[in-house]
Image (cartoon, rainbow, N blue to C red; front, side):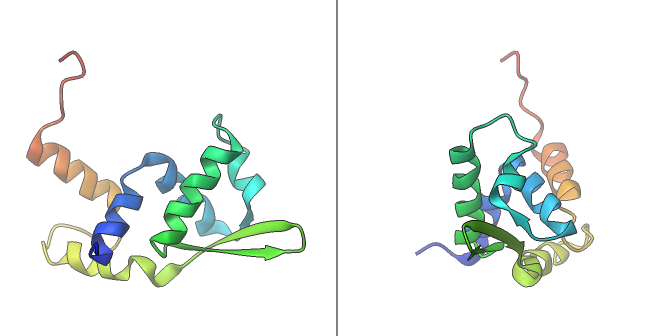
Amino acid sequence: MAHPLDTTFAALADPTRRLILSMLLEDDMAVTDVAAPFTTSLAAISKHLQVLADAGLISQEKRGRVKWCKLEPDALRAASVWMQGFGQFEPVDLDAFERFLVADLGEPDPAG
């Protein structure tokens, strides 16, 4: 069984899912509203939402015929505490964490 942090970081590894989480910071959203700004299919966005839900980062609820998504604000607490242990990150500053990893590991050269 995967450690909960593994599931969280796997969900956060995708830029589309990070953008979805940013969108949900504002308010709950219907799945169709979440999908609207993306060029990918509704089915693809639904899969991203399921990954986020499986990681506990969002919850989904059916209201009538519409499925709504809600950010679970405490879901990133364990990841935030883990990152703060390194003393280089603000709470839940995933962009800074990504920059740190790129700087530390080196960004792969797209030209090969």
